[in-house]
Image (cartoon, rainbow, N blue to C red; front, side):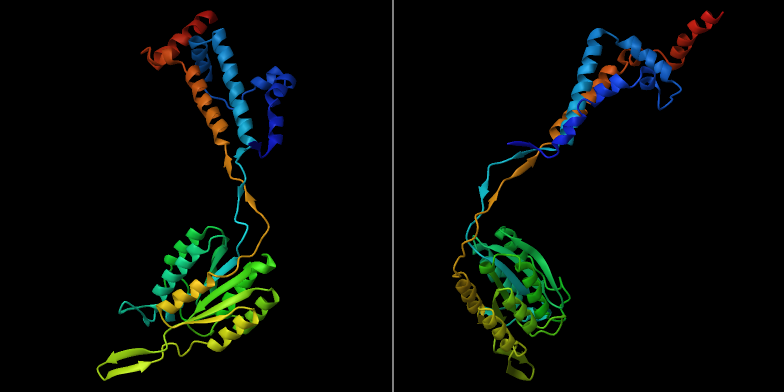
Length: 352
């Protein structure tokens, strides 16, 4: 249906009549801008068109222009039919580590070594696409934590943003796990108590930020936010050099103890992703989270329409200007100086 955002602007419709009625004729004709050749322009205009039909048309145009401007000022809008939003699902905040250590190439797929970061983007973006009915948010962290996407039903946009992530978007020299969890708590605390879920993926240990992971976990527990933590990284990586091959543990710094404690204290669970298939299986298991009933929500699309009456007023203004222009003088071919001389001669004769 059609609605006016500011209907009180309609009170301005009778303003021109009030001005005409209560302002004296002398005041209305008092010029605010003095133009040296205004008298000549007025004469040309009076010589071109002064018929009754023109005056009626001019009055109609001015009236319609004023009505169009007033209607545009009311900001009309068309409100569509209500659209039901999903009534089940969770408020799920995805918290992703994009620190420099995620560039470690210890993930193997089809005999090719991939970085943790590449695998994470593919798996997590696919997970976001599948979470139909959930309100998703995205937090990125490295040396600092930032909210990339507030909670939204637009899963495709969240998945696209995950797929477009790059190492270096945030200072990558450290990992602020506690700050990331704390930021997630801040954005989830106002949501329904039984629907708050956080899924955090990291490959390291907290070594930056103002809040420790355990302190952030306690805040999440108080706010009834369930946290699922994922530790990513292989247990063994073979490095080859001129001295030979040697096996190292690329996940030696992974803080599994604190990640496990945070998850269990909030009612969640800690997962260990040692390879690509592990990570796929973990997010497939997270897909089985039971949906939570929420209050029914509706959305009504709104299309603003103010530009229609405004555009009509502008077009009528151009039409009125074209009707008022002395086209006959313009195309008569008479030089302007001669026209001025001819216009001045009768006045001189009258003076004699």
